[in-house]
Image (cartoon, rainbow, N blue to C red; front, top):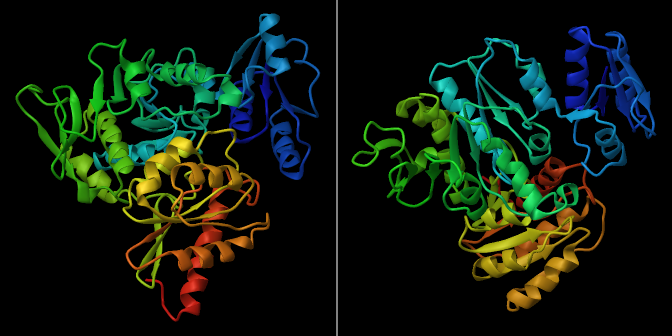
Length: 458
């Protein structure tokens, strides 16, 4: 019998697949809410039992538990391990149950940039005429696609998913970057990085970020690994030469020749970390045999997801940019590095992350800072230590209406040519339902500011 822990998107998808294969399935769900009850009713029609409430233990007869997001130190999982019950994730389940003619996987992970890179990759594969789908942490559970009519799957994997995927063997795999995140779940930076590195263990081609210490360290044991870099590439790398993205890894003679993949103008929205995402996606696509022409066309066809360094408006010669997706210091640092003169809108839930190095690096670019959210005081103290001449405004309150005051204060600090950048460095759940809601509140406030000043914000 299979026990699925959690009735969220991945858990419900795993339960459906198992039930349709004739397996006996019990789902344990701690939250007894309207959405969960609706999922339970759907699963009941397939013969799946859903039990609500905090479980005291696994159901009797459980042979395999499928955990979707539960931390390894959860007492239920510790007890399962002690009883010899195998615990796997939804991704591992998908890999084990894929048919013999299943599409190969091109997989990637990283602390930041995963969704952008996997969507760029999917666009490149589509431009090459391959029937491709982005799955995994991007929102579509892998178990829903493994038996589908696809030539290749572009698979975004989180550290949670990789922690319980001991046999996944992608055709090619990339680690974009590794910075402190989810340490409460993994227990340490080393364990978090180890989980990320699992993506390389059985990959046909290993792709790593030569500019990122942890990514390079994880790839070191694999001879022939392909690096990507924002610098001039050496043999066996893809990188940047002047204004071109070039390949010195998948050419006939990587020592003597290079092939043009695209130009920097083809990367949208343009920012150094997005160029790195494009290079990683290109390396994975090239490992699958995609032509340089399709790589370029895929980048041109790519439509960025919202709230990722998205230009909102220009008001009084000041640009307003929404990067609400920058929910940790590493992501915020990449965003801040993209602009020369910034009024920084930051704050939220830092989840224990340190912001001193972020502020130290960004200080020369900062023209002002407006802080909001639960942990704004920690950012203010870091600014006082490392950017003491930067004017700082704190906007108190936990209601979502504070964003109008935030934008008004940011506009007061900004001068023509500056960028007001929402790159919070923290999660949003102290004030909003998620980072999209935070970004939308910022954009609405900017447009109201433009209307008050008699501008169209274009």
